[in-house]
Length: 331
Image 1 (cartoon, rainbow, N blue to C red):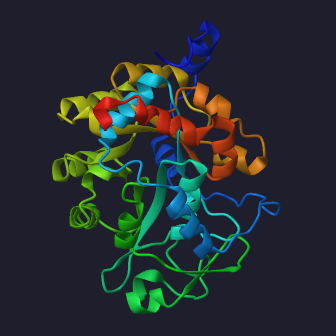
Image 2 (cartoon, rainbow, N blue to C red):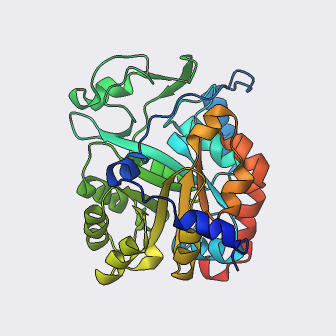
């Protein structure tokens, strides 16, 4: 059963909203997010958070059937959290092991990570084309070898060193195994790059891969039919394309863009067996976000910057574990 019954006025309002422009919709994946005001948040060394997070975030997801787990979340009306750029904060840089560990400890299930490639072909976590904003160095990532990149220190949102270095995708997939789910965002790497990396790490069934076009979603499904994909879906016509192409819909999570969701579309997708996700980063920045509303509008996964606040508002840690405890198909 879904979380709520639709009011007629809400349906009417949703129906009359203009369909998002395709470029704008896809751009919502990677829209720049201004920093939150985090001055009051406590600062812990990243190494300490990684150690404590590893102990706290036990291997509760070991061997989980991810597709079945998401189905149970939808059927239970539960909302799970995804830590955007791993959930950086003072003391832990974006796309770092320290941020991942802290977010899992808070109650996030998914860690969204940006994966790029060095000049010598090593997949590392980095959002920007250059290393200037998030490390102690300067330069274009694609022009640097892994040895050069690994020598750089990561800095947090305040520009303070964290004691961590740029992690490889391989290291992250190893660390997160059983503790959470990696959601991989491709930054100037190919579908084959990420497919090969997931296969090498035996992580195909414990990761989500973000796709930016329907063509990429279809290509990835052909290449890795077992991986769960985050696919931008604007309307039921997009859903029909997936059906017509024979895509296994249990391997699809629908990204509805930035904002507070689309309850009518969410409900229709739920009836088709799809889970949905979205995020309201601007409201988080402005201090006007309502995490309860985001959950009530139907999302099974909310992408958030402020993981501690969202986890507290939604009791996310306990809710995530309750889904698994009641989901025999996922265990």
